[in-house]
Image 1 (tube, rainbow, N blue to C red):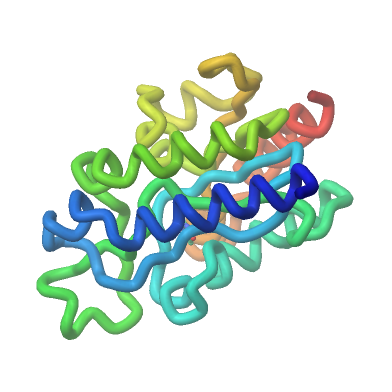
Image 2 (cartoon, protein in one colour):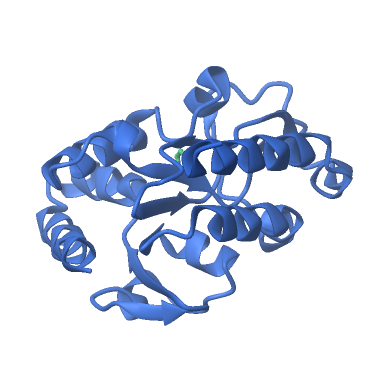
Length: 202
Ligand code: URA
């Protein structure tokens, strides 16, 4: 088998394991549908977000809702296609609000406990992909990898994490929220772009 195929097989196996995994399910605070990852397992760049939202759950693909559309634009601005990079989340299930029955399109960030329940999968994914660089989208994602701190403190540099260059930047949802608040968010968008330039230089 070609290397790409064997990575794909390992990821498929891991996804099946995550889907059947009891630890996340037994919390009772995550919804049932698993959203694993999307993209090219041979990619140099691995983007990691927090958890699927309503649209991701519907399409069973990470980052396809409003934040995902902005991420796709950022990837394109980097001169890449979405299908060329690997996109995943720390938490593989959409977190429930209340009991999840009347949740509609409301989303929330995963708790530390929810991320810990899914952490073995993202760690295993990183080991399979072996990306040249990891991009954490937001502090929830970096926290999920065990990196403490706010984006404000962690961004703006390339860190070394378990032998991988890693960049933390603002989550696209945050950029969208800032845009809606004061019609701005330009300063934050510029910072994300600076971070992506660092990613492209690695
Ligand atoms: N936000 C995330 O962190 N991940 C997704 O997949 C979608 C939105």
